[in-house]
Image 1 (cartoon, rainbow over the protein chains, first blue to last red):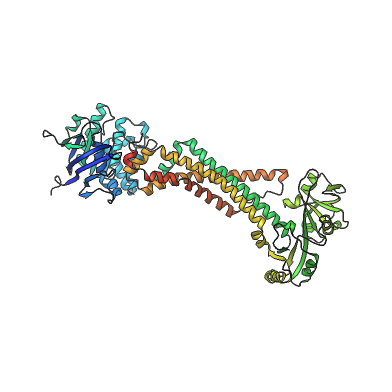
Image 2 (cartoon, each protein chain N blue to C red):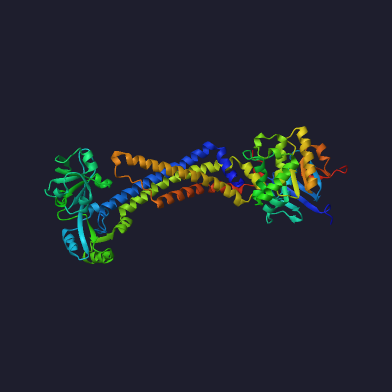
Length: 228
Length: 370
């Protein structure tokens, strides 16, 4: 199987509800994502986009159905730490950085978790900082960064341990139009260069159309428009 | 380094809260150190009275307090004649009061007693001791609070005594006490012929065990203990030590509750941050180490601050004239170690629930937390 065709993310008839079934979020969602693809998930708030991303990252488990990452099912028995440390990276709408730490320190957190060699971690940090134009801001505290810089920092943090899958939950949702476009450009550029598979939840259809696939999510199910 | 910064960052973020927790531990440590050290010093002083130029103490078996011990004069005479004994000195303890002082310790001793001979005589002549039944020698502090000088007559208990000298000693009990001739004390306290203890100096220290065996065989109602054995086994000392540690422990428990409160708040106010650390791959162990690390830093700073405060407090107490000789600022290394370890354990115990809570946090739920 060629690299492009290898399925790295698979959701099969995934159901998920909360509050003892009172709130059904995923209702038989199915999806396959090939290595290196960029996929945009669009849909109204509450349709299950974030929940599906959380399932792919092992942060949540389905009531029924199957989720697999790189061909291995994500369930309670799997090494979830390994998944979070080495296989997937998360970017959220709110940057979720630790405000009292510097940009560099925030980025290095995943390497602390994964106990990465300090020299390697520093090298990777500088590589990503250069790619994202943050080299001159490395020692700045988060409070002093602009919204766009914060989201770029969050992107660097997500990619520190060289994951091959990036799960982005409305990564430009809290930015103005200009910053949003710049961050998205950067995101696409980096995932292409690093060969990362991207699954992104977004409300911004103009950005979503620039991904390889645009999927619509409604009422807990995924629909792939013919036009995409 | 970043891990350490994650620990310290949160403490710096809530400086006042962290300060209060550190202060809680510090005051607990200071209280424990002060109480235990004062008590250890007091016990040391009391032991010092007994062990003055002697190795073994003989007293009545199964008495709750040496003040109630009666060693008959026949036993003293017999034991003094044993070949292994260099000398045997009887001491009779008594407690009386005067108009201003509710408690004055009286020591009934013979003229040959080392306590009389080894002390520094500020006034009077040691050779005049015990020449008249109404004569007494006062410790320096006792002379101070009785406003007495040699030649004066002072009311002590139900009697009036003639002061023939004032002696100075480093021992607070002796310094605040009254020395009477043994016969006078026996008569005064209605213990004719008896003493509270006999302190024994052996010709050869190796004879301690045979001596104790002989006492046990000859006088079943008496017990002979070496000084160290006495300090360890005397029930009053044990009760005092246990009380001191219990009081200090209660203080530390309060400090621990402060740490627990701080750590609970610390976890609750950064649930989202902990979730992000989880998303970044932090394990339960790493989260727990971070929480315990925070409490350990609080405890460590609290312990250091407490040791400093406690030492200053002891030094200040030592300078109070009324406590002269009663406070020994020598902090035993074992006490220091126990206090530090207890402070750290208290801090760590205080972090158990917060750490368990943080470890149970599900990232997906915590990420929704506002």
